Image (cartoon, rainbow, N blue to C red):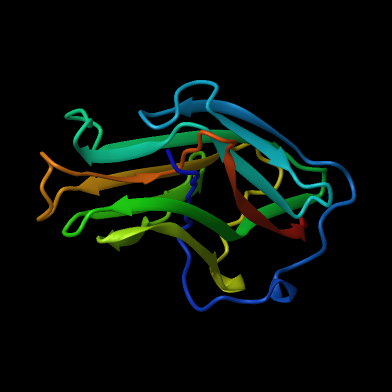
Length: 209
């Protein structure tokens, strides 16, 4: 199996520099607890979260997340999904948005096969953002890495003074296309056999009124 991970946000506009994001991070430590993990791509215990020491980012680590078609694949293996609900405890007087996502993965696609990675995010009780989709076409057998940033005006902020979980919803799909499923195997993965790879989300901060 190949090392990989991927996750994307619903982001608009051109990439922006972090200097454009509001406010400095709060000085106190942020605590993130995993409330629930659901989906065919992330069984309990296969996803973990860690916060950076400077409170500017957090990572989601997947250890079992792969969609595949062809030889060795089951009838439901072509699509895998994972929804993680996080409890983010921020210092009083601050609120946050997710301003950037850095993500990477690995895909092995035979000639004619295709794959798709898609994801969105939202706060509990608020409307989900639109999915961002990243298609892949075979032949391909390589790492992929992308960074998406959102403009300040498009940031979705956590409501001040409220307790709302932050939800990440990711999905992987693999399709046979014109490849021969009786002779080949194609897959896209957020998975590793030699140590999990992390996806990083970058915070934007502002003070509450």
